[in-house]
Length: 575
Image 1 (spheres, helix red, strand yellow):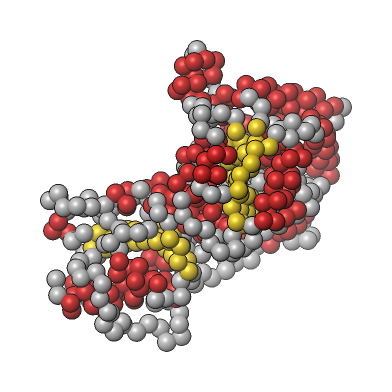
Image 2: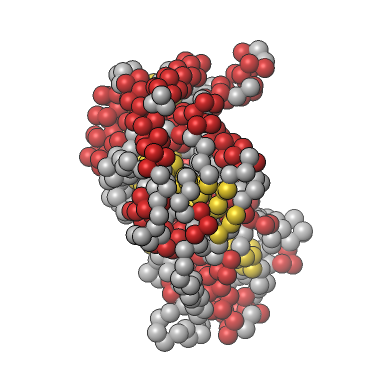
């Protein structure tokens, strides 16, 4: 190919990166590769903060952590071939969890696809329905320069939510040809005011209270990630007289008379589940991890209780398919619509929930006060540390997020909690934590299981951002602990269960972390864990704390004892 074509290609990439910056993109994640050179050269000549990651799968989840922390789209650039396929898991997670990612994949010239050329696969449309927008424009030297900025700007808008108002991943697959290193020709001018090529403004909705049909009735707020300001949620709940079942990722999960954090344990008892049935359930943001809570809501809906889903794209977050009303309104706007003169439901309704919450919290606190570590105790200890240190908490989507939801005590100020609950996989959680810690928004603590840690061990290969502080806490129960709670545990011989489901590994996470040059240690008691987290936060960098916890069977027994004790204490409050 001619030098002129290389220069045109370089100009396209420079224009693309400029529109990324104009659209609010501040971070780019780069994986090494030859074919993506023109994109990478344009990026390093910009004001974008560049993060280099060796493994594309890790890079995608790293970008998710960055995007969640910053609230802005993150650009990911990779070379051609299987490098693109490695991004699939993170793109799927970003789709389901509504994380704005802009994936730019370099491709080989179209005439080489299907010829056996190296690092050449069918990349166009590779992510299918998981992306909000997929653009495969062909060789860029054949695209009119007047279209370059429009193409790039639309990608940013669609990643932010576009007209659907649902953020998520977008994909630019761009064939790049030799020469890959060239000086760009002049690039087409952008807006003179520095704004992106496309602007999308959303007018505010009209006045009025969308909750008018349900005001004064016994209601309940179920609030998860993306449910809005914790202060606004609690002000609205107070005016309505409705308790708030707060997911750990909800800003309202804090010490407050209207907040309920023990719903999973409470609702496992049929008497309590029946006595606490509301007339209306208002769901905002992501759903709880608790199957018990979600099934309770579905059962109530089938019995005629009104279920009201607020937030954009509610139909895409309604797996129970129970009867519901969907309000297509931003949660913040809904909370502000509940005025100070709203008629609250009867005080006894909230008091019933508050009494049960106090009783349950007392039981959980006393039963988890022992020094020897259990998985619920690790979750409460880590959550408390994150709140006191002003740290963000990144939690794996297996037992850690459940133990955090079920047992962690609310603090005066809730820590920010991130979890990849889109596809709910354990893959990439360490990468997500490193990405979150690289956002320069304060220290990060991660809570993962031993299998999740080993699954994402390639995340430890790359250099860390200067000033990063991350403490990775690993529950070492020698396998996949969540499977011990499932019917598979009793449906087969122990040896077969261990081989097929629990999959214990002889690899010691302490030695793995040390092998990569990171500070690591094993702890067995709560005081040791608290001291290790404190030391890691003070030292900076990445450190790994491995917790020797109860065996998987003993962990199931502890959960059962906690549930039984909570039921006894909470039932007594109904007398």
